[in-house]
Length: 190
Image 1 (spheres, rainbow, N blue to C red):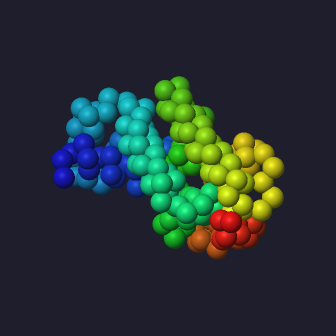
Image 2: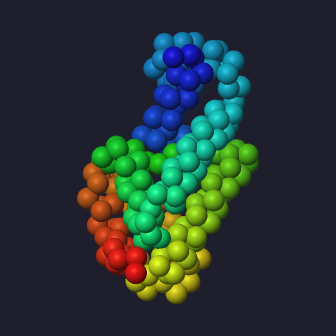
Image 3: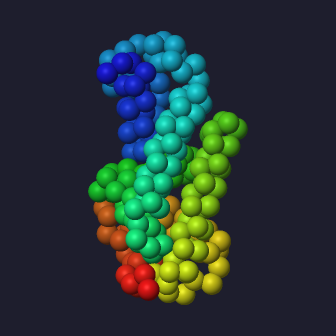
């Protein structure tokens, strides 16, 4: 693995486990066995590293959401798949989704990183709004009156559920928090 890829891989894991603020270039250098100057060669500032991480992470999640939308048999199934994707990102309660980890430490992020984080959240909200509209039309989820409001509530639920599960270090709080949402899904797209 090349140095830049190793840095990105290690930085993502560490930031998802410990948060943006807790990860230093020194810790990264030690973990992969290089000098701090080598990190600065690839990423002059920590913000540059964060931007690269978010770009990769957002592109990956965009592909995953695209696959879900294309392969889900209903709007409810698409939402259920996203709930599962956020659950899997917890790695048994040992880490957060990168965007959640960054949002928690938002006050120390650069303006550029905050802008990408906002764009990521807006893309997720747009995807969710489309999924809730689809679920309302195909009747695969009960009680949808406003897909836009549902999307905002769902994103807040998923990210908040991740935070409480990470704080507990286990998945049970995430599962408990998302259970009511899952119960609204009919499983019958007719």
